[in-house]
Amino acid sequence: MNRTTLSLIAGATALAAVTGFAAVSAPDPGSAEQRTGAAATLPVERTGLLCPRPSTSDLAETTYTSFAPVTEGADGKGTAVLRAAAQQSAPDDDGTSEDGKDGENGSADEKGEKGAAKDDTAGKPVLQLQEPGKPVTAEADGADAPALVGTADGRFASGWTAQQTTEVAAGTGRGLQGVACSAADTQFWFPGASTDDSRTDYIHLTNPDDSAAVVDIELYGKDGELETTVGEGITVKPRSAEPVLLSTLTAEKQTDVTVHVVVRSGRVGAAVQALDDETGGDWLPASADPSGRLVLPGIPKDATAVRLVAFTPGDADVDLKVRLASPSGLITPAGNETLHVKGGMTAAFDLGDLTRGEAGSLVLTAPDGSVPVVAAVRVLRGEGGKQESAFIPAARPVETRATALDNTAEGTTLSVTAPEGDAEIKVTASAGTKGGTPQTKTYSIKSGTTQDIEAPVPAGLKGSYALTVETRAGGPVYASRTLASTEGGVPFFTVQPLPDDRGMVAVPDASENLSVLQR
Image (tube, helix red, strand yellow):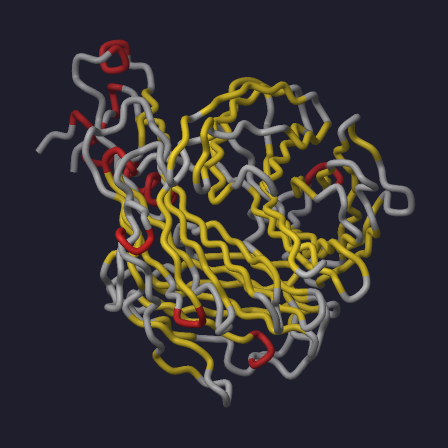
């Protein structure tokens, strides 16, 4: 095997790690990058996303949204399609699982939306993009809304983003629940889950492939790993979704649990749905990989309670330095200057009304960055019996570009923090799903601060729209988006961190370029 063949394998392996699966085209042989040997940054040409099953409530109303930004240099053709998973599993009355039905999604005529297709058969399109720069939506009601498996290629692949937003009017988990669809992977960390009687937490596993995946689920509580009965060797059927109720995996009831998902074979998408009897519920996305420095962006300024849950996978204890990136700079919360986390044990800390009416993000640092940690916060808004909850995990930075979907003219807050250095960002509001002209603004974020920025809104907006954040200079930049509404006096809300969309990939220089493969 010659050197260029090895380079192709290495490049393909790196791209697969970026998005679950991905591909790029090589630069034109006459391009500047090819002539000078400089590395080229090119749009990804194929990628995949997975959306968990939205709800088991008959009162749920779900909106799926799909979007791809306009990307310079992208292929002129392509598709982006989300389909119902071929098999849906759901808990029945005795806690076991059975195959369920696919959701119903209105046709283009019924919904008045391009891209929304009626689907009563598993595997058929639920949502399909028509053009970059314009989001499309589909709706599904009740417990039959399906998990989705999707792929995008060509002009839609770079920056392709999908989101599902569900409103549950009453019952366990009532409130607004939102989650960004994610790429498949082989390992996930979820600090902030629970096996307590007051919570109903599911880990949703979605398999995009044509072969079964085998998954182990490990649970860690305040004293270490919990004894589990059926957490090992869970099989997720091909192109299917499997919700697993965490409290069925162990007899131990604990308020704060860290979930570790390890895939033995294959790959899956994973997210925790955390539902509470009294304070509503939301999705808990995976924390950023274990690190000695974590940022949890965009805690709502009117949060009435903030609970931090942290876990270190190793044996070493760590004293985390805690700082709040406020609009005026980094500050140390009084009484919570450092937090002690024991190795292999989940630690939880009540931080109260941490933000005190101002935008804020948590910055956690281990001494010398030597001990890796994962973390998330549970946030409450409202008072007494009218509270609602959401989760913010440690996030990855917006290295180049990230997008939040399903925004409305009112009720959307975009929060951006630059904990280490001044940054400049560009924010683009897309066309609306039913009409509107894109708008763009540029913002400066001072080092160590968090800003709730007045994001642009499409001119003449009809429907919902996408907000795309691009890092122009400085940083690193972290961002999150909050959707909020009030129903019956309860402050419904959901928060999604904005990870980089990984839509651009650096291609090796001419000496190891994919375009020079020799047979």
